[in-house]
Amino acid sequence: MVSWPDCWFANQLVVRAGSLSSDSPVSVISGHSGVGKTTLLRGICKHNESLNPRLVFQEPTLLPWLSVAENLRIVCEDEMLHAKWLDLFGLPEVEGLRPGQLSLGMQRRIAIIRGILAKPGLLLLDEPSASLDPVNVERLIVNIQAASAESQVPIVVVTHNPSHFSELDPAYYELASRPAEISPALR
Amino acid sequence: MLVITWAFASHLAQSDAFPGPIVVGLKILQESMSGELWIHLGATFGRVLLAFGLAWAAGIIIGAALGRSDTLDLWFWPWVNTFLNMPALVIIVICYLGLGMSELAAVLAVVINKAPLIATNVRDGVRQFETRYDEFASIYRLSWTQKVRLIWIPQLEPFLFTALRTGLSLTWKIILVVELLGRSSGIGFQVHLYFQLFEVDMILAYALSFMIAMQLIEVAAVRPLERRVQQWRKDGQLA
Image (cartoon, rainbow over all chains, first blue to last red; front, side, top):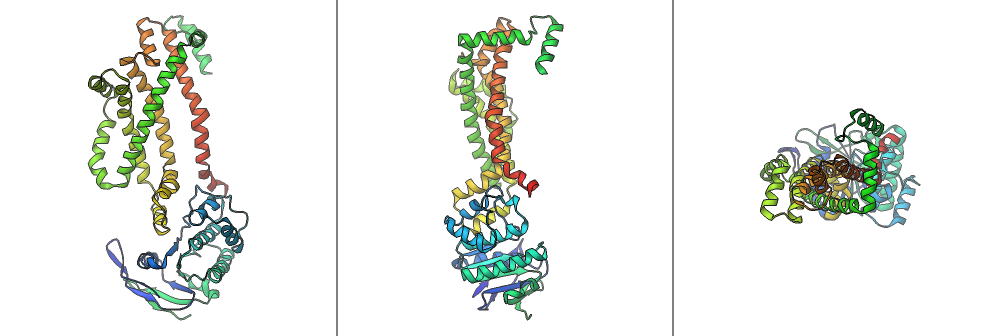
């Protein structure tokens, strides 16, 4: 079970303490912009260190001065594993390219691979479908599905657009009010 | 174009105080054949490299510390700023008076002069670090050496190159003053010697040979290195 204490930002209580009780491999937390989704993910990260959580940021945060291979090598030296995941995500022959030479959608998917290669006990995705066109959203969902099945790592997604993730058959939660509180949501 | 303008202006001036490029070029050739030029060029060059290397190292350490810590910045920035604005000549004279007319005093004077400028550049660079990379490093538990090598240095590169360029050019100008005031070798010493003999062609020959050497360093080392390490900044235009 993933839980968190009260989450504060700039001396303000943003998200009240709570937990995700579902056994589903993928949980989707929805909420409008500014409700505290990213603050919640940081709180989860901080409070669940024993799970070795890895956060995949909304901005992909790949290091732009390194190639894709070098970015992945920061967390995992095994190049066979890099190739396996890049192949699984439909991203062959990008190892030598730098992030600036890739589209935002590709950068996001590589950031997810980097998250998985870091061998997390929990993978947190911050608005992974934001600013992507429908084709890229579709690719992303297929990739998250593959990542979940192959790695067996529980995945928590925060988004303001939960309908994008319906194919993952996730457990839905909603983050609402101020300070925000989490509650199960029906879809 | 510059050489043609110089030749033309010199021809119009018709004065020993303003020799043309051919006269100066012949003097450079003469001094290089006798070996004198290489001795003094080498002496100045050694001092520039040593002083600039030490100033760069000290400036990076001080600048990084002030950029990362508000407390250190509060206490030590006024000191850095004071030395930044202190006239080079005052520092050179104080070093010579305190340590004698030694090589140590000469190099130290340049380091004290230049380190604050490099520290200021680096401090400004560190303050512009993107916090998201620090957050990534923290969440993905990067080691301290990984943070320095993979995250901090690449973000500092533009500031380090600015410090390298401005620092190198200012360093060699100060070295010449240091040599003029208290050394018995180097381009500054030769300029001083030929100033006393009023041989402007020799002054220009020594000054010009060093300027050419510095230009060669810029073209052969600094610019290719800069191009290589900053190639990724052009990626956005390619994507």
